[in-house]
Image 1 (cartoon, rainbow, N blue to C red):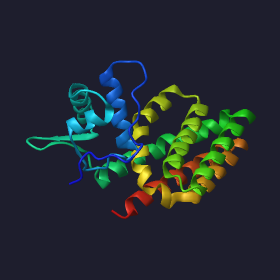
Image 2 (tube, one colour):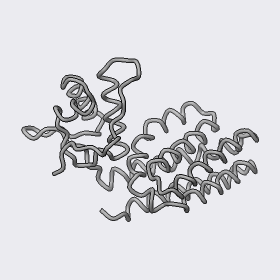
Image 3 (cartoon, helix red, strand yellow):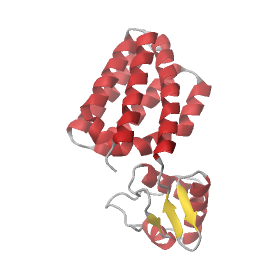
Image 4 (tube, rainbow, N blue to C red):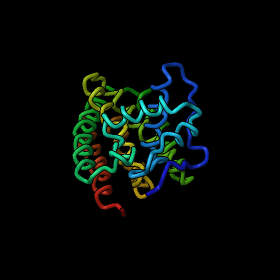
Amino acid sequence: MPTTGLPQGAVPKLERPGPLRDRVYEALLELITTRALQPGQHLVESELAGHLGVSRQPVREALQRLSTEGWVDLRPAQGAFVHEPTDEEADQLLSVRTLLEAEAARLAAANAGADAVAALEKLCDEGEKAVDADDVDGAVAMNARLHAKVMELAGNTVLAGLAAQVDRRVRWYYTPVARQRGHRSWIEHRELIAAIADRDEERATAVMRAHTEHTRKMYREREK
């Protein structure tokens, strides 16, 4: 069972204002969603505190919160471990994501103007560069930004709020298949942007639904 060793350069800086426990929570959540801390990995309070340059108390408080939210499992007499999502958990969440993002694509096609389309194309350019450079973390980040932009263009705050609740877990599930999705994912993004530019709500919905379903299917079929 791996313990809390972290890749070099993976530890985020705790420089933002706010309560220390909240900054430690955000740092640990980022390490989990990017898989710098792997599912099943043992989280040792003292080691995490040393990596983050803090005492054990805010780490303990952050782990309790992460446990409540389902990111960490606290096991009696064993300690804290990064949660290992079941295939059913991932499949259910990615199914919900498909519903939310397909509606966002439809609304974006109805609302988006030329400037919005140009912003999407710029994000797609950056994502393609990350794939070309085999920068998985960069591709995952740009994928999240592009989908967030589509959600923003939808202009529906309730929909955006629901999507925000699943966004971090979508990143968590997408990371292990990002390299496999590769250029195909960004070709699908280009198809989506074209549909939005044409203000074709039906096509944008269909493209987004197929796009998110491809990711869900690949996650199910990934090598474990």
